[in-house]
Image (cartoon, rainbow, N blue to C red; front, side, top):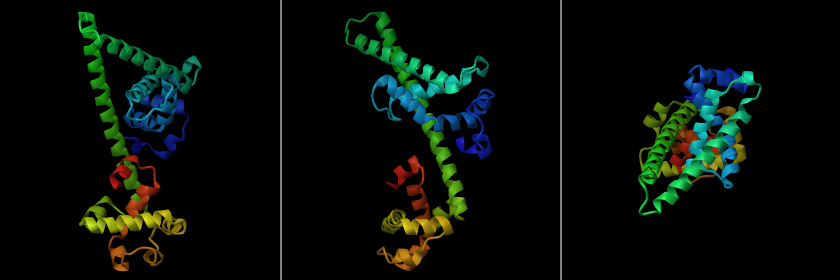
Length: 242
């Protein structure tokens, strides 16, 4: 998973990291796929002439093409990886668009030939493969994000086990904690105190929320976890908070 990549490794030249991928380093492959998603989306968007979301099939095609480019890249040929990857992504996406257009046209012909039916079947198989790959990538990204979040929690002296054992159990209590977390997150001064001292400024926060000091103290770790999610790059966890 991407989080298993050490910081020292991440700072190396991209071509050196790709060499690790070619040697079978799956963690590095996941890390690069995750971190170069903006580049992939931008490249795919150039072909599609529209905004590309991570849910689009074309984006999944771009991800697979980027992975292929890493595996096929040869720095001895002189070119750097990204221009090479850009060409491969565009080529794969164009091929995909042509196939989809062809298959749609074939599906309109009720009296299509066996060749058309074969093409449609191929399209269905490709779509299933894309969906499966996307699901796998999403699962791995979610796991990597949870590990990254656990690492951030650790700097505040919090473990996942603490959140499960000490977190609010009832819906109303969770909502009160969420409201307190939002107030803390939206107040720059309070957020700065949390970031610098690794603790909630309870007295100041109590003055801004309709929650008792005792309740804030009891749910301290849970509130901190919510604020860290709101203030960090945690796509999946933010959906959970919503």
